[in-house]
Amino acid sequence: MKQLPIGVQSFRKIIEEDCAYADKTRAIYDLVQSGQYFFLSRPRRFGKSLLIDTLRELFLGHRELFKDLWIGSDEASYGFEPHPVIRLDMTQFSVSSPEDVLTGLAAVLKDNAAYYGLEPQGANPTEQFVWLIESLQKQTGQRVVVLIDEYDKPVIDHIDNPEMAQANRAVMGNFYGILKGQDANLHFVLLTGVSKYTKLSLFSKLNNLKDITLRQPFANICGITAEEFDELFGADVDAAERERIFQWYDGFSWDGETRLFNPFSLLNYMQDRQFNPYWFTTGTPTFLAKVFKDSPQSYAQIQDKTITELDLDSHDIENAPLVSLLFQTGFLTVGSANLNAAPPRYRLRYPNSEVASSLAQMFLSASPAVGDPYDNGFCQQMEEALDSGNPQDIAEPLTGLYASIPYELHIGAEAFYHALFLAVSQFMGFRVLGEVSVARGRIDGVIDRPCGKSYIIEFKYTAQEDDLGQALDQAAAQLEQRGYAERYLGSTREVYKLAIAVAARGQVAIRQLED
Image (cartoon, rainbow, N blue to C red; front, top):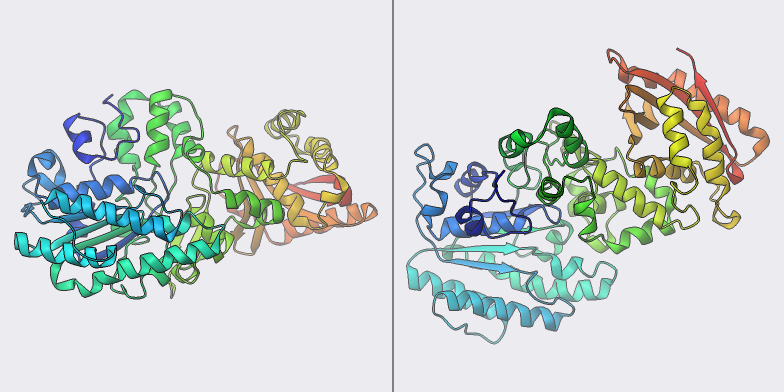
């Protein structure tokens, strides 16, 4: 196996040191041939910086770095005509205040100018940016390439401080806004970032960007596909390990068809050979914990939702709905897409076990009354009951889980208990989905066990313990009337239908329906 470039964002270093590399130059070629102004959103640690650096080397005309890649082949016939390149990386300076942002922008512009033997002129970074573009075009006789990495960092770093986010947004809006007026001097422009929300307000002046975030031709421009995995690592893993790797780390998608690994998690696993939440532990948005603490029932409502691009563009990130935030930050991804709808619709899901279990852990940590499910034997009892085909045996551990919650924390709503059940199941690594849409309704929960057993679950809540039986009848009736088990027709899996009723203070009743 080749050297693993964990954390390496230099394309030149990867090539010259013969590191493992998934060739993205076919998609890059299609991108540079298809237009001039582009925007791409991807979660953190997904290869955006490497993409930016690859484009920089390409536009500088460094043909020797690409000789063994697709774009350097006779089929591509790419000319490697050199262009002056301005690369701005917003992670390289402090964004704690508008003053820090202005100081940082001036510093990176100075570095870019120094590469060409120039000294920036102008009273502020916006004027210096204009001067540098025009000077490079005059000096080289070629139009300029502008590559901006993590364009939204000055804003998203202050998601919990709307006033600071707005102040930084104003600075960045003026700075980016000059690009449209420089059209005659620009050859290619790409901005990358985590969020699309700030695009609407930051780029009111730069309204000629083509957003390729959800465009199928560029779905795999970052990340590692199954085919690329097999080419890079297929000889180093057996079939059983491969299946687990795909369950844990594969599954990100922006078109509902192309599935991708987060490179950071995959490369770390291939180095350690341990199933750890590598991506999650590199930095988790603190606002998510606050959301789950303030609104625990929201956890059950974030899966299997449908969005449009308008849902992403119509809010600034600090005011965005939870589902959109989770999509932008990588906790949800596109499960399927209806491109024939107007506008196109995208159904969201968890990408993989790493993300599902990590988010569940965050939810449980935000509810300190629940504690660690492994400490009270809940997890072991759940696994034994489901794998043995005795799902009624989960009633006791569920009652214990719910009863351990202090009275003042109980929320008189079905969604709270539903969310807690899903979170613990996902924390345990169960392959579980909540709020699953089918033809005649939405299934509260679906659990697929590796042993071949699947469980279809309907939750009902009642405020009165005396009404537990009635709630159980309602759940059972809904399971039967809406034909939720039909999603498994033709499957070889052993399917169980479970009605679960929960009363105030956590009393639980379970009924298994016969086929």
